[in-house]
Image (cartoon, rainbow, N blue to C red):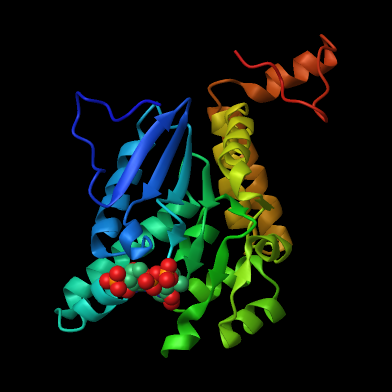
Length: 282
Ligand code: COA
């Protein structure tokens, strides 16, 4: 596994670690002694890491996970909440904006594919980047919980909005109102993650998913995931207009000219079947 590029200072290392492996950037929240609770250090570091990985050729797919036996215990009650109580509102708001940026605003539209690999505890604020990432794989025995109700707050930031986007209304209400925990298998059933696998297979299953994504045309993949995010909130007529324009933009800007290459391989060469496999690239 390749570690950071020695010629350039890396923005990770203090609260988050990054390892590169065959196109995958494994980004691990790295405060296992605090169950990877999100403190201001993680917030600033994750923003800088997302800047850096955007342009780093070693990263084709970004996987977000946690060190040790926790994905993330949510926001750090001490450092992110209580320590900010006496801080001037303008500074607090800046921190909250920066947190929203990495957890969902940027994550949802990140130019590279993103996968959350849920390896253990996943609470509260962690649901934001879990839903913000494109895809998610969990260990069957990971533990999820919207625990806010247990300590006298509501799932804010955009946690409530995020769970409503992927879970049914009844399920979202149930877990928000009871604070009951559920495991990775249930998370897959609730559509909060794409799949749950035995803990021992988690890394390999995530690696396989990343490899599948790396086999696709990266520009078209970016266009497709962005279109999926935006289309969800559009009317049918708006969606038709937007998707037509997005298709034209994709064809116009795709450096691989994938549409024509794929069509020619299918129609002229009869050398592949797009229903079953990807066209031959490069
Ligand atoms: N904020 C701040 N500190 C946290 C934290 C959080 N969200 N989650 C865990 N920690 C700290 C604990 O205070 C403890 O610190 P200490 O060693 O100084 O006492 C340390 O991490 C280990 O936590 P502990 O509770 O002993 O670990 P555990 O493995 O028995 O339990 C959890 C793990 C995640 C179930 C439990 O820590 C917990 O309930 N955390 C809060 C989860 C939550 O409600 N998050 C929502 C925030 S929006």
